[in-house]
Length: 503
Image 1 (cartoon, rainbow, N blue to C red):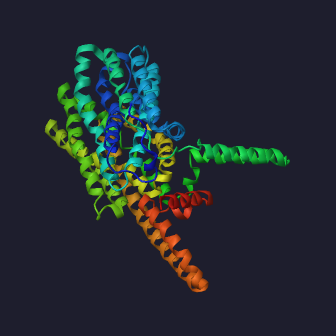
Image 2 (cartoon, one colour; image 1 turned 135 degrees about the horizontal axis):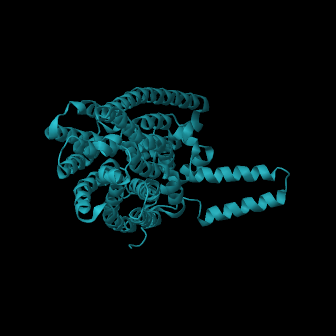
Image 3 (cartoon, rainbow, N blue to C red; image 1 turned 30 degrees about the vertical axis):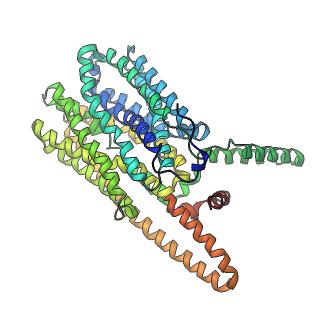
């Protein structure tokens, strides 16, 4: 493993250098996290016949895996804050391998839910969150491009795994394939080894933090007030809030993003899970059905970095939330038009447009969140978003499978997914417009207050104004629009100390 990075880079992301090796590691780790739950859909038809179960029952395998991947977000964020990205990703890779190897020996569908769904999904969660977080620590100006390249790992892996899984099944069956796939997932451990630490420790584990905690403990012992129990409870809440910032639920932009994404994920993953089974249902040959996922992945592969470059432009980045809303509406429109496709050629065209739309959404999924909350609160934001989103992710594919079982036709599943995503995109567009208007209004009021203080204070204001300007420019560099008004006094003092140390 490479040695830890220099601590001189603590507050200034290098925007290159070893950061590109980190992007490569994130490319592998994120690629497996997103592509693997979709690629195992190749085995669904055969596993369904083996266990003699329904579409909705077999769809729970991918749903549980995806829900565990997203639901494990807070745990992953806490572990990253405590131990850093590298050990968490390595442990996640080991968990993924264990889950798939144990799934090869399952004798019931419920055992498959536990091994392939829960254990492997939790391992993927420990791969996904740290990879996204550490890319944000290494890049600032080139962050949209770096995120786009890292997220491109998903289509590359999907393009590779879809035909590979069909080949493995033909030669080894689904049980032998699961053992081989478990070994392949161990490459996440190698990717995690590239994530060398950068910046100060995210958790309060340094000497200063320990000393302050000791001082607080001694002071509370000396005081011996009857309300010591209440103080201890308050300290526990404050320590937990450092690991997972619950004050984000008071953040207007974060809540808009969260509601829109919860609605979007009801229809986001189901079409890609059922694309290959749908093609087989129409009588298309197995390798051709698997190649539809490769078409989707190839287009997605180029769409993500291209979207990252476009989102980093001076025209798009200031209003990136609108671009994200458009991508979601475009994605939903593709699903609404899918039932019109007849034959393999029509499905190939649908897969190409779906790959473009899917890549656009995924490339900006975390960039838009960081744009709203800023890098300092991004780790907690990712954890909170994923735990809430896991409910709709868990229900999306099974609801689609239920519609297929009820009507005997896939078109109702595509219509449901498309309608939900179009609605989510429209909601985000309207609410982000409202958010931008409110931010502009709050900025005007702040400037008026500063001018009023300048007139009242006279010469004293000449000393205080530059300090305010410095803090706003620092927060603009971090990319958070609403971070300043919603920070606690403690966080403001910390950021002030950091900015003076940088100067």
